[in-house]
Amino acid sequence: MPRPLHRATAALMASLILAGCVTTRAQRIGEDDGTDACRAQVVALDSTGNFFAEDILRGAAIGALAGAAVGGATSRDWRGALLGAAIGGAGGAAVGYFAAVQRQAGDQAAVTAQVGSDLQRENAELIRTQVAFDQLMDCRVRSANTVREAVREGRLDRPTGVARMNEIRGRAQRDLALAQQINTQIGTRGAEFDTAIDNVVPGGKASLAGALVGRAQPIRATARRTVPVKLSPNAGSAEIAQLNPREAVQVTPATGGYALVETSSGLRGYAPVDALQTPRRLPDATPPAGEDVRSLAATNVARRDNFAQSVGNAERLAQAGGFELAG
Image 1 (spheres, one colour):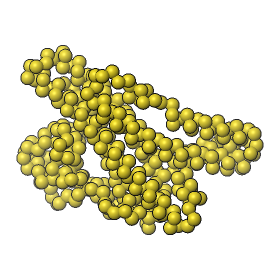
Image 2 (tube, helix red, strand yellow):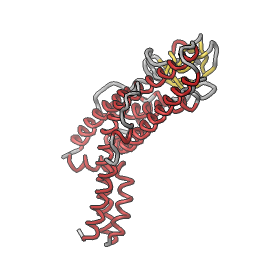
Image 3 (tube, helix red, strand yellow):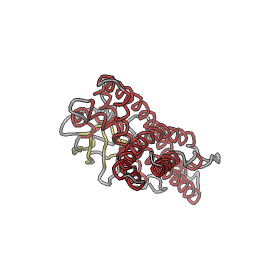
Image 4 (cartoon, one colour):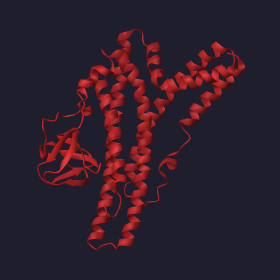
């Protein structure tokens, strides 16, 4: 390798490595001053991001090095290498992983087995991240509800309540920034898997559409009675709103007997399917079970979508006054 190309590639590798470790936990989520009731949940969510960041870096590095080699060979100078590296780095997250699997595996069966194994591990991490995010947001909402109740009952004066709510809102905003960072990492990693899925699943990712009922178009529904709207699709989740009897909402399938509802104000949360009057039966959007590569791929796509949706729902809640005293 010519020395300028060698130096350029080394610099690129250094920048990629540094990009993955420029922040510490304290920089991402702040020091623990003992005043955050949800600190354990913040740490739990932050720790899930390590897995996705490490694997994203590996895929980008593979693509960047391949691009640098092509660019240098074509142009015979370091400028071509840097251009190739930039192009490769941009595409590495999409093709680097599958290219590496192909090089390591001896045949198509081994490629499929490796992708399936990696999808299985990825899906387990996505579950862990989803649980961590749900628990953190649940803690924030409960903290906000506690402050509102204390002010309403006169156990806390309003100026103190406003100050405490401002603190909760600020922390929730930092939580959401962290969740968006993790979601971006998941999306970049997901591009790697999409390339692999298109190569190992008959019909590719497009063929999984039938299994992903959560992507169905919203339909109109009305509340049969007063219905609590939950932050996440489970009975123990914090309540973020209520539907009035006969109130109209838009709904899409969710998991565990719940539907994702969107109110006229744009707030999104989850309500029991049996509490809603719908023109047709809503299917359950629980990711498909199974250990074959097709089922694992469908589960992966669904869990990625679910996490992105959860982050978006929480952001809407924050924007709609979910962490305001008067909410």
